[in-house]
Amino acid sequence: MDLPLLDAIAAASRPKLASFSTQELSNTAGSFAKLVLVPVPLIDAISSASLSRLSEFSSGDLVGTAWAIAKLAVDDEPLLEAISAASIPNLRYFESQQLAGLAWAFAKLAIVDNTLLSSISSAALNIIGELSALSLSRTVWAFATILFEAEPLM
Image (cartoon, rainbow, N blue to C red):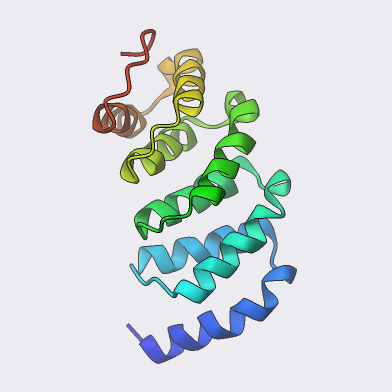
C-alpha cells in the first residue's frame, strides 16, 4: 500500500469535492474504506459535500456511502440520518443487495433506526423471492445484530 500516494490523493481531493459527481463522492469514500484507511479530513469533507447533495444520490450512491461510513466505523450521525431519510421513500426501487447493504451498514454501527428498518423489511418482503443467498444472509445478520424485530420479516 502506497501511503504517501494515498495521503496525497486524499489531500488533493478535498478542495475538488464540489466538482465530484455523487458516484465519485461515494466511490472515494468506499475506496478508502476498502483499504481501511480513515483520512479524517477527507471523510469529513465527503460527508459535508454529500449532505448538501443527497437528493441527487442514486440508491447505489446512498448505500455505498453508508457502507463506507460503517466500514470505517465513523461516527457521522447527521449523514446517516440524512441517508436514511433519503432512502426510505425510494426503497421499493432498491435492488436486493442494496437493501441488505443498507441494513448491514446501520447494524454494523449499532444504529437502530426503526423507521428505516421497518421500511427495509417491507421492501424486502416485496422481493423476497429475488433475494440472493448473500442478500438473505446479510439482511438476517443485520436484523439479528441489532435485535430488530420486524414481525412480517422475522
